[in-house]
Image (cartoon, rainbow, N blue to C red; front, top):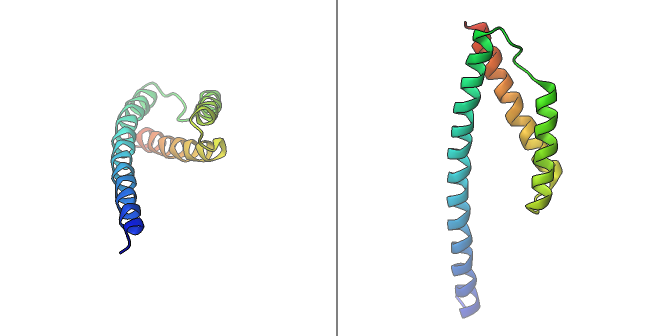
Length: 100
């Protein structure tokens, strides 16, 4: 391995360690988020409230798109990601409501 390749491998290892650390943060953060959305789902089921709140969802999507722009993240990706998370939350809310 050339000195340049050795240095590149070291840099690559540093990036990969950061990526692994950030992946862990994402997973734990999503876990914490879902604990709160589960509590929301239980509250909605208990009080016979709708599983979905389109106005809140639209506000959250707009907020995340703005944050994504500030974070130099593709806002369309952020929107797709949040839509996926929201659809999972709604599915959990509907399951909670159906199982009450």
